[in-house]
Image (cartoon, rainbow, N blue to C red; front, side):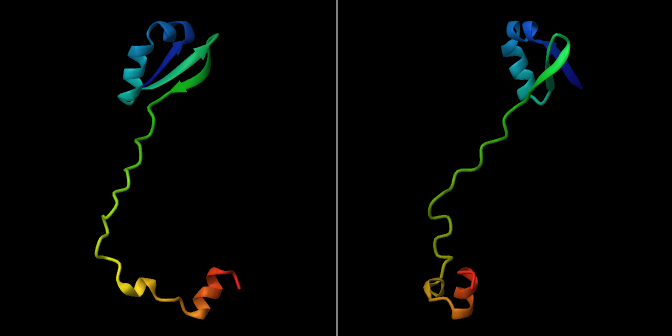
Length: 77
């Protein structure tokens, strides 16, 4: 369900509206009765990288030189 709120009311009840938006409610802010903006939660932050997660999974072959045909492909030749 979408909640439409005028700007004056939104200023008065901003904290409550933020909690509702964070909980997943769609809130449209209206100015002079016309939809003006949408209040919605931010997307979750991406997971932080954890160094060493792949320890022991890269073999020494990873560091071998690439074959000439693969090098050419990487360099656009």
